[in-house]
Structure formats: C-alpha cells, structure tokens
Image 1 (cartoon, rainbow over the protein chains, first blue to last red):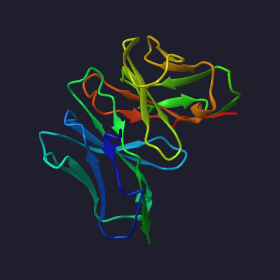
Image 2: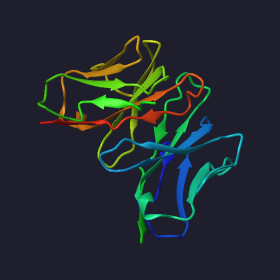
Image 3: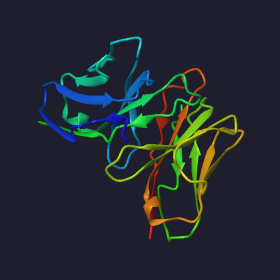
Image 4: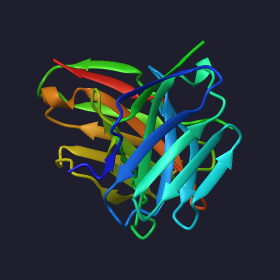
Length: 114
Length: 113
C-alpha cells in the first residue's frame, strides 16, 4: 500500500522553462511534506518543505504547493537549469507521531535539456 | 559544519553473513534515522534513534538492529543477510528543534551474493 505516490517516473523539459513535479498522498495524518533531490551515487539532498498549515512555500527557484483537500502537492522549478537534472523524491511525515519518520514516493527523474 | 557521513561506501557480502554500517550525524544533530532504498524505489524507514534509544521502527525484521552512541553516531547491523537485503542504506540526521527535516548521508551500497 503506497501512501505517497509519484505517478510520473520521468519528466523532460527545456532549459529555462518550468518543471512541475507532482505527488499524491493517501494518509490524512500526514501534515509535513518535503522534496529531496538525488544525484546518482549521492544521498538525497533536502530542497524545500511545507507544513499543512500553509498552501505555498517558496525558496528561490523552487516553490511547493499543497492542496490538502486533494491530498496533492507539487514542486515548481522556474527557470529550470541543466544542473536540476536528477531524481526528485516527495516525502511526507506525521508530526503527531513520535518520530517524524519519512514516507517516500518512488521518485521522478527530471531531465533538463540545454 | 560537517554533514552526515557514512562508511563504508560499498560492501559485498554473501548470504548468511552479518554486516555493520556506520553513520556520523551532522554537527549538532542528535537524532539518526536509517532507510533502505532498493533499486527503483524510494527510501523505506528502518528505524530511528534518539538519545541512544530506538524511537520507532518500520516494517523490518529483528535481524535489522541498531545502536546510537553518546556522540550521536550510529550503527546499523544486519544479521543473516539475504539476497533481498541488497540495497542502498541511507542514514539521516536531524536536530531536536527541527526534527521534521532530515539530512541524508551519501549512503552505503550493499550487495549480497
């Protein structure tokens, strides 16, 4: 039973355009969401997060949107750069739990073409 | 500020053997979590340690065990290795004032033959 789903295994965009990565979740107890970027042979790098009390959080070129009623979040990257090419993981946690364990999606491979 | 480090980077073992993986948390972080990432999957939570005690466990059998030391570094031990244990093992650390955000190390790639 996958509680966090990233339905697009891959996404290809042109440099300078917007990249939109999507994530859906089923567990209504999740109230904190994170995006990580992963290059081959490296560990996941934290990008941006959002609490369920907000619907948008922005950090430079990265913006995360949360739609709680739809149990959906998205990561927007504007403008996309070739160095953004990586696997992006969506993760969720429940702050009411004792340990904030992260539940991950399977990831989306983003390719930004020059 | 030193990030999360893990050792070794790669390891090859045979079925039935035992393995110990090591993790040093980021400076100032007192909580360590371990995850297993199989090929083509997202990381899966194994367990978490806080103040040298296990603080939650995922759906992994008891042959997966761990330790946290007074300096907050941690070990993951896996006994009676099985072929399906082949994966990338990731350690993540977090601080008690921002426990919801975990920072990952580079991982240890384990191959069981």
